[in-house]
Length: 195
Image 1 (cartoon, helix red, strand yellow):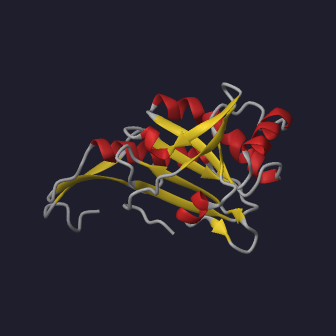
Image 2 (cartoon, rainbow, N blue to C red; image 1 turned 90 degrees about the vertical axis):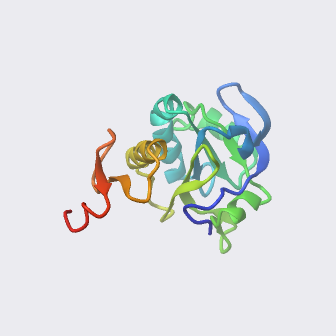
């Protein structure tokens, strides 16, 4: 399993681009300088997965407005992705790329391959513009993703990225804070014992 703070494993794969109705190659390094949200799902034409993609589509414009791209990844082919977009009432509005991982290399590199089923585990990875992993979550296969939480985590990570720490001063985002850069400024040693 990859870790927060580690470089995101690069990959090149086929993808279905629903907004353009085309199949083409896509590489993670194509997005250098942008935030990337990888949303892994176990399989096309499954029940919770359709709700995950629908939920990400509802926030897609907000991610894009904040210099982020969303990529959906599963062990299905681009042909399966295309038919799923064309036939599923929930997935038909999706505009972000659906990445093929038939050879399971991406799922394996990220530690998301369920070796018992051969399918991808349900999870999310957020990668910063420098290609560093900043967020990882893995879900029960029957539990849909809380996309508002993921979006808020992204917005707050973006704030922290844009406000780098020094050894004696840094911002933190406290628990239960949503979107809006609600932070506490810490000064060492003055702030010790005051929270």
